[in-house]
Length: 206
Image (cartoon, rainbow, N blue to C red; front, side):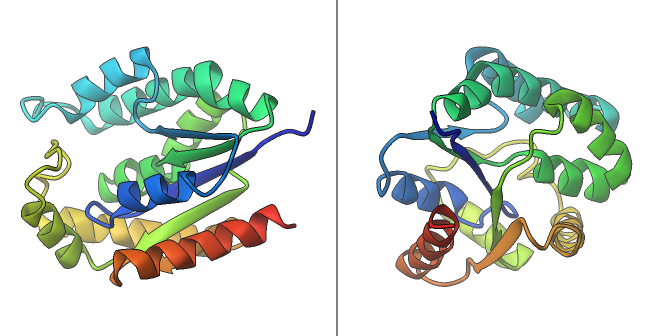
């Protein structure tokens, strides 16, 4: 059996990832659609702790370790088995989120957070990562307009934090140019979807 392909989706808060991922998943057969943190019961419980708006005392290193722990469980219980079955795994966030949010924006260091995650994932990285690029101000404006969206602890961070997240992602794009492809997320849903679909289809045809 041919091994599956691991595709992740990244971007600042409010970039519209979840909407596009749902649309992409309907275009292909044999797909696993999942998210981080979460995707399976244990990781969803960890997600609830991380994103709880009342947990304002959480230390940045604790936050980074919790993300890595959730990622590990999700990987062994859901992602790796799906890849072994030959599925296309579409995952809303993965390691790059930790590197941008905790490594860069929280100031823990990209290398330090990457080391934690290397232990968690045992070098299993995505073959393709699609980054939804959007100005932090526009992303936050979208969050505030979307009344049905979950507002979590990270959404409540100030604009400076979200600007640092974007800066962190830019460093990752330069570091992993062969893996990370950028999509302009400021366009219409259909425009973003078509651009994303084109990138994925190119990857699958290789």
